[in-house]
Length: 305
Ligand code: NCD
Image (tube, rainbow, N blue to C red; front, side, top):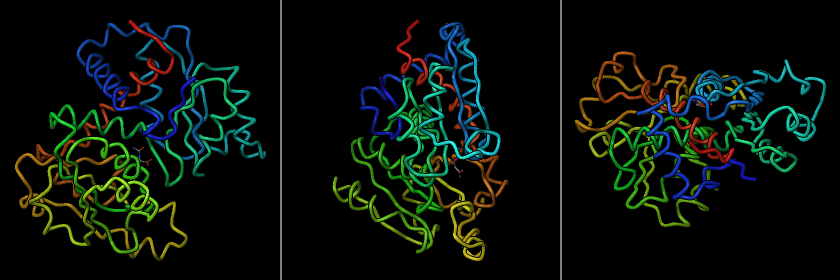
């Protein structure tokens, strides 16, 4: 049985299959409306979520399946001290597939070791978020037309931002990818990612702390919020939270076909005036999240139409 804990749990070929399937779902959603009839998805969310949980649930409903689950640790037996290992053993007999979000890095991996149903990591602490990456790849493929030959700016909280960590792991498998990492010194990409992923594969990247000078060279700008919940103290968060604010003045420096992505939620890092710029595609990106999750659920359950 296959679990998706890291973006690398899917080969480039499997990714391609899922993205193509998602594109077909966008074109002909009716074809898929009964494919998960009689199947259940459990959403086990130990951390807050809007898009990820609701898009998983919408995805299962669009496939004709059912959903069950909880949306906070407080409303589950975790508050009584139950381990994820015990929880997943039980959920395995209630559902056919599960999506788990947890504040601790590695929790979905542990769950997968005790599970008899596929486990999808819906975000584990500051570590990985593979289904956001699938969403990002579908957005890039559809709106940019390619996944290779790209200079990608990633901006904001690169230390704690799991969406960035997963995106980097996934994108380096395509040809001629270059990263420009834009963050305050204290929120730079973790050393393990530099050593084990970027340097190990000779991926070109630069690290800067000012956005304006690099804007003209970017094909994509992936903005992220400063991850308040992962900070040890509030003063550091307050000092760093508004390090970068993308506005129309900065957008003027960018290529005419540069795209702005953001996994959302946005706090202050993109001024709302940017929303009307046709290059701002983050709301469209959120819409694609439903289709890639439909395609992933179908694939992991081994279903076809
Ligand atoms: C992201 C997450 O949870 O990591 N949100 C999401 O899933 N779309 C990004 C974030 O919370 O900043």
